[in-house]
Length: 292
Image (cartoon, rainbow, N blue to C red):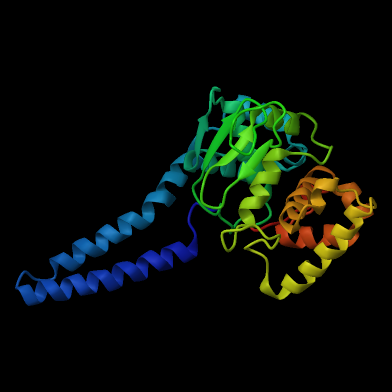
């Protein structure tokens, strides 16, 4: 994520020019001069710089030492980055924490829980500095699993759930377990965040919204092939990946970041497709040269 995005500068600059010109024209006709245009244009520009200014201030804040220790222990990718890569990762964490909402349902929302989600977002975005998190979201934390009616139930079917237009629900227990064992291919945070990238036409369909359209058909073919392997028990991915294309994508993302060496060995084409999509190789974090 960037502090200032060129497309945002152009958008608000053009908007200020257009609306300011219209307001100036109205002012001239009303006999009050062009001052309304100046005020409107200035107001639009202020709206445009609010987010970049907030991010600039966040980027200047020291990253808490306790947060850095948590990342070093629980996120192997971060641990292998060089100093510049770590700083960019930390900056993305700060941006995400400031721009998302976190609430607990009968549980206290700790810095560790918030950080566990932000680390997942920073990981998914690290290879694509120009990407932004799709939208502001509310993350709801339940102590344990929950059922389809959103009642907490240790025997419930869900550790996490993402909605196209609603909150992302996460089990505290599952979040903690996901980061505690970073090489088992199971991380509920990565799984649910992957779904958010998949919400194109309100429903997740296994086709991430940021996927290059020219790669869409090849991606569909690859998913079909890989889901057959899952159903036949010939895949590294757990059986849940065969539920549908959306769940396949989410499970594949978990394994891409948590077990990249094994995924590359067992499913070379799938690994290559995810590497191209995220623009990084989790096997060699220090070698990734995404534009800063």
